Length: 80
Image (tube, rainbow, N blue to C red; front, top):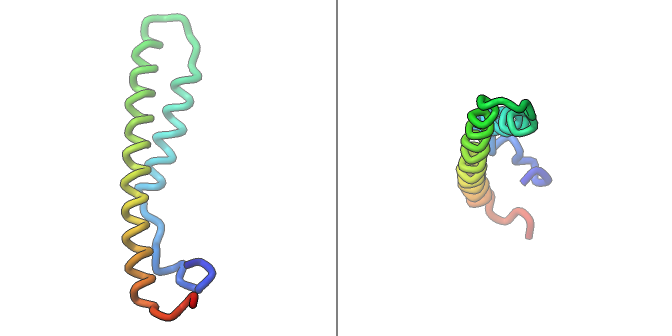
């Protein structure tokens, strides 16, 4: 689609930004290695954020696929 000049038809979703923030926060919390009881809670939060990022990844994939299929259907004959 990018090659056919239809890149603008599939807009960037804000959920991709949220997903990236969740991934970065999860990795930072997972790398935190302080030997105290609160660190276990941080690692639990990191797991929650990582699972949230995974769900957002799958959801954004569906959003982009739907937009891409709709854009491809509107432009018949291109790519033949």
